[in-house]
Amino acid sequence: MTEQRCDICIDPNCEGRHDCDCSTCCKKATCHRTLRPTVRITTACTQRCGHCCFECGPDRTEFMSQETVEKIAQFVQANGIERLNVMGGEFFMHPEWEELIHTLASAVQIIRLVSNGDWAGSKPTAARVITFLEAHPNIYVSLSKDQWHTNRNTKRAAALLKQHGIVCNVATEEQTTEDSIVPTGRGDLYSGMYSMFHTYCSKPDRKYEFLIDEQGTIYKCSYGIWDYDTVDVYLHGGFRKRFKEVGERFYKAFVGSCGYCVRGYRMQGCRPVRKR
Image (cartoon, rainbow, N blue to C red; front, side, top):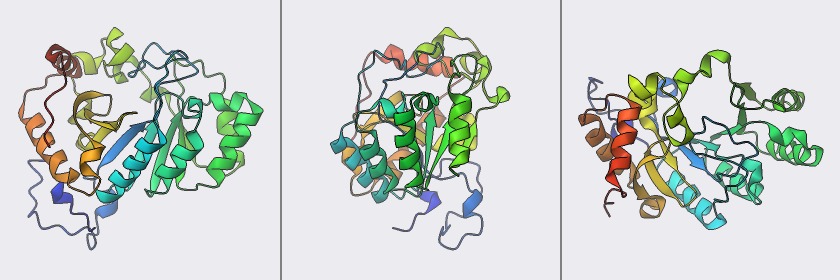
C-alpha cells in the first residue's frame, strides 16, 4: 500500500495541492504527517507516580492479550503505520512481554519503548531485556527520569543499554516539569500550562498521535481521552480515512486547554457512539 499523506492530513493551512506521492517525495523523512500510535500493553508498573496519566501502579492488572496484539500488528500493517510507541505501565511487568513486543516489532519499522528502567534492578530480568533488544535492532528505549519517578535504576539501565550498543535516550530536566504534565489520570492533580492555557495536541506533529489500549480501543488523545473506535474494524485498511474524519471534526471545535478537553470528555458520562 502506497501511503499518501493527504489521506490523513488534518492541517487546514498546509497550502498543498493534495497530490503528494510519498514514494517520490524528497521531504518524506521530515514530514510530520504520519500516524504514530502509542500501544499500551499493561497498566501494571513497579512505581506509582503522582503524575501518571494512566494511573499505573503495582496493583493494576490490565494486560493486553496475544490475540489483541496480533490484531494491532495486522492493523498497523494494513493502514501504512511505520512506527509506534510501547508504554504503560512497565512493559516487563506483562508476563508475555517478549511475545507481544516481538509481534509488534515484526509489523513496523521502528518502536520506541518507554520505561522507568526498573528492569535493570534485577540481573535475570536485565539479561532478558538486553538479549531481547539485541535481537530487535528496530527498537530503541526512552528512559524516564524526573522528580516523580524514583530514578533508582535509570543510571544502571542507561549504562547497560549503552554497553550493548542499544540506542536509548534519557529524559532531560527541561522535558520533565509540572508544565509538561497533561491533566489526565493522576495528572489532574497538577495545574500546569496544559491544564490551564494550552493543548498538548496543538503542535502539528502531535495531531497525528493516538492511543491503542489493552483492549484494542482507539483514542483520539494519546493520553486516553475521546475513544472512538477499535482496531478490529480496520484490519484490512480504512483507518486513515476515519482518522482524518475524526481529526477534522475535533479541531473544528473550540478546545482552550487540555483541562477543558478532559472535563468535556468526563462530562459525557459514556463513550461516544462509534461508527461502523
